[in-house]
Amino acid sequence: MDFSSRLFCLNNEFTGALITGTEVVWLTFPRYDSSPVFAKILDEKAGSFGISGEVATQEYLVPNILKTVLKDGTEVIDLLLRGEHSLVRKINARTPLEIWADATFNYGKVRAKVYRLSKGIYKLANPENSEFLELHLIFPSIQETSRGWVISGEGYAFLGHFSDERFGIFGKELKFDVETGVERTINYWRNLIRRGKGRGRISRMEIPGFKGEDLLTAYETSVGVLLGLMYNPTGAIVAAPTTSLPEVEGGVRNWDYRFAWVRDSSIVAEGLISAGHTMDARRIIEFLSRMVSFTTKPFLYPLYSIDGSVPPREVEIPWLSGFMNSRPVRVGNAAAAQLQLDLEGFFMDALYKYYVATGDSSYVRGHLDVIEYIADWVSENWKLQDVGIWEERGVQAHYTHSKVMMWV
Image 1 (cartoon, rainbow, N blue to C red):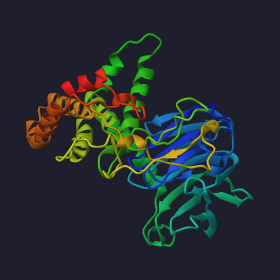
Image 2 (image 1 turned 180 degrees about the horizontal axis):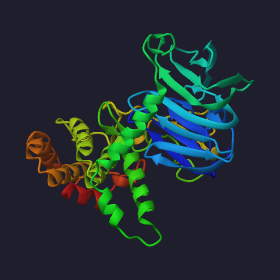
Image 3 (image 1 turned 90 degrees about the vertical axis):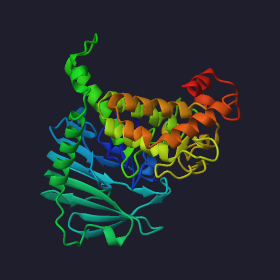
């Protein structure tokens, strides 16, 4: 597949999707660290959710909401519904378009079995367990094809993920209103970004080559992506919504980043504080504070699963060819077992900056046990060697960066 076009990232505080052109080429359900249902970005055979047509323009409508205009005038709005494990593609088709949903499970190893439940409603089931996707095509005209469907007119393609038969939408008495869900989700992200306090400062900045409006759009998109990468149930924030996108095309340094790194999370918290999203930053800080151990190194692991559990073992997925044939594809991250001594400093710096920005002394007092234990442990162990920010496997040394962060 040609990935020369831009990749757009959509998040909804549960999971994330990547879109290139008109295809969803990465989407995990129900969580960021779950197996993908579309993973074409890692292998042509791993499935995508696509729409026929050539792209004319493509940009974020608001953060985490993508608007695509095709050359025939068709408009597509893609988003992950807020508070749900579902993706919606709102389509205003000016000419008949083909849609396909080649879903897979277990990292592309198992193809979904497709069942027709009713007109325009399909079940894409995992044959190995009770998991399934429910696809609703809500359009004036729908015709089945050998690969998918041909639709015309204005409507919605809704794809929801469910763990078993109890939770599907089909056959339930409750009203199912996709239109309202789309409108509310768009407003949610628009309002969330506007509540930040950095917009005014950014709009007044002057940077050569950037118009004020373009700079503000880039800023808001960046803040929105960071907010969307938070796993809402716990406040953990993933370093990235993907695995195995290579550092160098064709190389072997292809890592799984769908975890909450202490270092990255602290830096994101500081960024959100500077953007005026202090309560969201505090949720990240709170998640990290709950990970502090009182029996050994405060942050025993450099990264944690988004539910706070011990990170999984790193394994290779040999049946996937990798992004642009960059092997191996990995799930899990062996860096979890490394000794990294800079982490506590990054956490303390984020907590300090939260206090400076808010003056919330009661929150700091509520975490004195954590603060004191970190200070005591660092003062007794600062002469240790570690792998530091470099994370080179099997190599430990005295790194200046680690010593500086322990001083912090």
